[in-house]
Image (tube, rainbow, N blue to C red; front, side, top):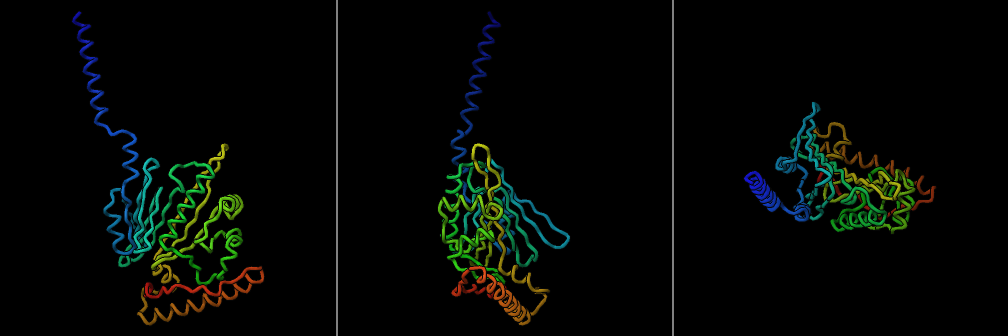
Length: 296
């Protein structure tokens, strides 16, 4: 009789402890909601970028013998990251992030490059329609932030009317303000170079190359995508094209920069003549952004 009574007491105590532990844990829905509402990590270029990486607990740092420094943020699939690239009125929010790699080649210039890998959607595998919706949302965000198409100085200024053809042949969009229809999207993903869409964009001293790629398609027609962002300060990019740029006095650097602009223009004009022969039209109204204030 006493043994039976002890078993009953043990069962009741165990049940109470179990209920107490369960009550103290947040409900799964609340955890998911808290993750969704978590504010984005802010990342700046320049010296502030060092401070940004340092304050995040996920940060890992590494130095290379060449003098380059690397800062890294990694996120788990169950809790993908959200980053705000701080760039004044052109600040850009990026979500569904797997990893961020910040690079500095000159400590005085701080963070000069950011490499970001993210998903197109929150889920890894999605329907074609849902993937397209992710693309539309991404492009709306980019356009609202004011990022514009950027022609590399030596490349032909192809007119926007040739946007789709140029993308199918080169892999790059020249009119980011145009959002492809669902039918166009399907054609691009199935037939374009590397089953992907590329953008070269610029805003306020920062250049970014974006590559949106379908990486897998399952037997039940679910699709997997990755979006790769390669940000770089225009200061680093332009100076990197000039030998010993960081050793030059201001006047010598300016002269070298102008010479590089002239060299690129001559190369571009040759390529534009070839493009016209191939049926492309050239955008005569395109004006290169004035990047010298960021380079000097």
